Image (cartoon, rainbow, N blue to C red):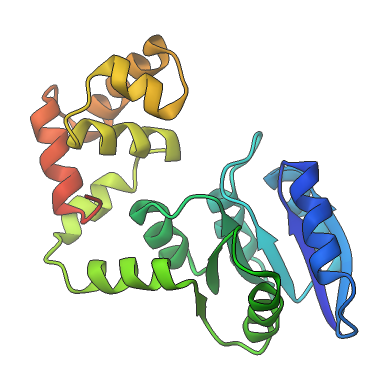
Length: 212
């Protein structure tokens, strides 16, 4: 039996995944969690083989949770599930050691097989994600820029990428569904962490890190 834990802040998503996976005779759904902090406890108590991990969650996001879980002795295999396929999140998840990355609209049969494959130790990437990984691997990014961008939180990286695209603060607010004040606060923190006060400098580092 493959022991599985589902981690997602949307109860409808958790229910849907249970319906998809619950009927399989070799998959045992042993628990779920609504955020990363809950996931730490559930994984400790239930000792799953595979964790289906959302990225964007309150309290503690999926990337942070992935990193913390994989630092534990005998960690589970992490299969990241998300509605987003942005390059930076794909690459960050894989750099942290995630064993697979699927979009939530993956057909049920392929999702079931992905769980089995990850449990066997095989890496799994949805087609769109695989394309991004190949593109990133063949690009001439600068390791120093990657290291600098890793200092940013997930939200700060999203804002930095929008800055690199040339978006104004109101446009960034609309694209990320946050307030302009939140965008300004994030840009201030980005400037401080990167040691700059130039949006152009931020954009250059995002490009050098292969995130655009």
